[in-house]
Image 1 (cartoon, helix red, strand yellow):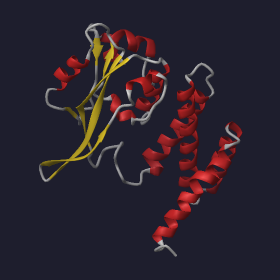
Image 2 (cartoon, one colour):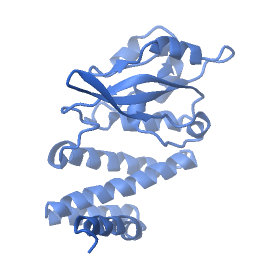
Image 3 (cartoon, one colour):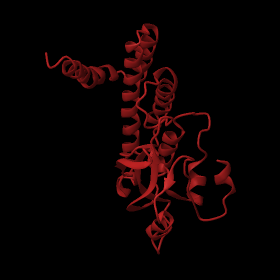
Length: 239
C-alpha cells in the first residue's frame, strides 16, 4: 500500500522477496500493452519452481483467468498469479488498498477486489513471474499447518467470502465464486476440526455455516463425504 501510494508512473507491479522475474520479463510486459488503449492490468503466466541440489526444477505453470472471463467476474486462477502482473495506477486507486489485517489471505481478497471492478485486461502467454517453492513457503507447502497457518487461513478467508457473496452489486460469476469458496473453506475447516477431534469447534463452524447457507449441508454430503469415502477406500486397498 505504501509503495502504490508513492508511484508516479502509469503502471506498477510487485514481486515477493524470494521470487524472481523470468528473462526479458519487463520487455514481455511492455509488448503486451496495446497501442490504442491502456488496459487496467496486464495478466501473465506464473512458473512454480524449486531449487534442488543447486539446480532449478519446474513443477507447474499457472495461467491467469482468460481476459474476457475475468472481465465478467470469473476467477479460475490462483491468487499467486497476481505477482508479476502490471496494474495501471489509476485502476489501483479504484480498487482500493490491500487489507493489511490479513496475514495469509491478503492477495486472495485483493484478487476479488480487482475482479469486482470488471477490469480491462491485456494478456501475455509468456511466463513472466517465477514463484520459488521452498520449505518456508506458506503457499505451496505440503506440511500440516492446520494449527497455525492453514487454520487461520481458512477462518479468515471464509469470513470475507461470506461478506462478498452477500453483496448484491457483485458480478454474478464473482458472487458464485465467493459462494463456492465459502462452502469449500467451511468444509475444509470442519474436516480439520473433526480430524483433530475438536468437536466443539466442529459444531460451531457447522451451525455458523448453516445459518449463512442452509444448502451447505446438502453440498457437504453430496460433494465432500463421497470424496472422503473414496480416499479411505483407496487407503485400504479398495476393500
